[in-house]
Length: 304
Image 1 (tube, rainbow, N blue to C red):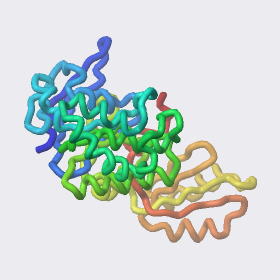
Image 2 (cartoon, helix red, strand yellow):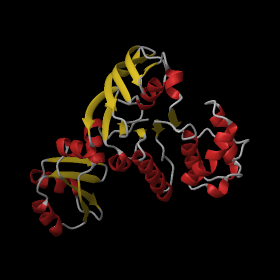
Image 3 (cartoon, rainbow, N blue to C red):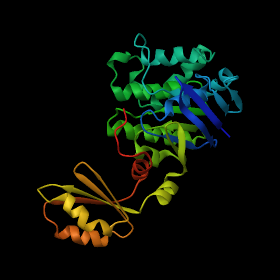
């Protein structure tokens, strides 16, 4: 296994932020770690990398015991942190060169890799560009390229596409798929459920430091949620509360959030027929997805 986590615990100020967490990651797969803000995702990554000492449990990363052999393990690991920490005093290529030196790679070898890494990140024309001149998407792609300087077996990505526009997100998704096809192991945290659904072979959802479910995206959708969702909006005085009350029986489950009602159905046709006759209401009919599973398991309340 690329990563084995068994009964992992971490306590801060008397509060258990990672609680008896266990999971495994297969080589060459993309593994997702999902959860609301404060669920313990970043702490778990830090524990797995040996950057934070656990209060209980065991970790094996690429065959090395963590944290005892963390330095040896990290020699074959790449990390894309949640926030870009590129050195503003260096150019794009200099950032890669300096980072490669941390792994003891000879300068000549790093310099030979830099054009390929920049091309991989679609930054081939930016080798001599200062960091301050790069857009947010360019910086994110350079951070991904930097994580590959040591040709790692395992790459940790903490919310790799947060703050990016759709074009940049799709480019990074494409690059991550290429890495997986090349046999790299990806360990990903994200708040974008469509990202997890596209990329992850397997994922866990954690909340308050505890694992609440595990499986492939398709498996979790089939196990936890009805097949169809109809979102109904009160657009022009359509009296949504009254509609919900009188049509609740046409769905297996109904949730309301603000001015929207979510009807979770196995057979949506009776409700769709009623909506076609309703006035002042707008609706969207779609297949259920991983975000529906996430909301059901962790709730709709805002997390700070």
